[in-house]
Length: 408
Image 1 (cartoon, one colour):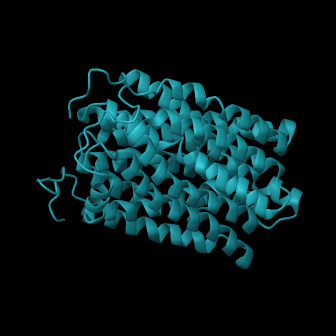
Image 2 (cartoon, helix red, strand yellow):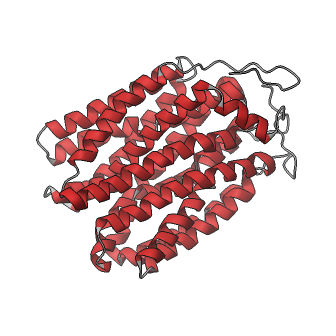
């Protein structure tokens, strides 16, 4: 694909995109730190908190489809601005909800919609439209890596805010911080988006969807991404409470989440860079299998702060390293004209997995007093996802007139 002479520069796309991802994903990355303060203050069960987080992930995934459609048609700027405002409102709702329903509406619905418009599907759409194919996987890795470093900085900041000003006021501060995404979005305004896309449109939305869902490799990518969501959201939300249940201090959990964010910088950059040279299906299979092994070893060895930090570092390398190769593969197969939308559908599968992981964690803990069953499920799913990704065909799909698609 030849880029338009009016395309945004790589530096501009990566700088503003990474800051937006840092704020959006960084705030979300620390939500597990609020599980016990909120449930203890409100007298709620862990399942109540987990259900709101599960709704958030499901709404995020579902809304991401439509956020992607709008971004593909009209550019990312408007979508990010709306998402930023919704994020601020959702965090205020999370802080001042008095009932589980209010909490689910703020934490689940509003923040879920906000994340749909301020995270990877929309940002990667901008990258896909403005970065040449030979650098696209690398650029996606860079954006994810810089955003991950921001997550590393955000989690201890959130822990400090909770400890110094209380969990409610900490959420208010984060709500104000989320509005900083609006001026960053200004830097991602794409020339040619005022009602018409700068990317060449060979297909309608309906044709693009029909083509994708009839293509087996798209289905395999969606299935693998389901597992990614299950694993990372279960760990991100429930590990702080799991560690506290085992007698470790809250600081260990904060440091653990921060280490995940720090080592995620290395993992996402490496996955994006390697995706320019190695089959991405092999990269994805390795990531999922390595996650299963890492979880199994973590549960097998005696639990200590050292074992937690080692596990967090390893999982950090594998945390969001699935994102660049998955999105780059979608772009390689189908092109970039509908990339945000198709990436939104793949991510919706991820969020269904996230819903199951975070909800099952709370539900089975309340039923059994333990997270053991969910840890075991996460291991089994990791092995399954490794096998699922191996048959993915990464070649660009052939299109012929008049329908512009060949039967899959």
